[in-house]
Image (cartoon, rainbow, N blue to C red):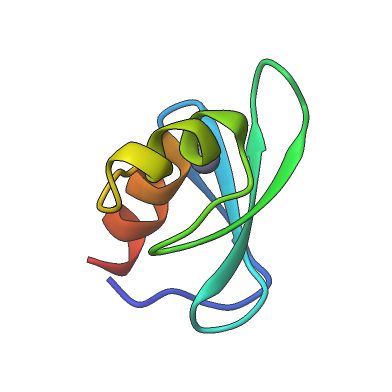
Length: 70
Ligand SMILES: [Zn+2]
């Protein structure tokens, strides 16, 4: 699947909108916050709390981006 920059993609209940090859804005369907995320970091609280203990942690925003980038 080839991903276009600046086009919204639905992944489950998230909308992913790439702003460059590796950076994206992820909007959560239920809370409407926009989060900046990439394949290995995200600004959501879940990621920030878990990444300290588990450096390879992937929140659902990171998973959505990885799913799109294959
Ligand atoms: Zn996240």
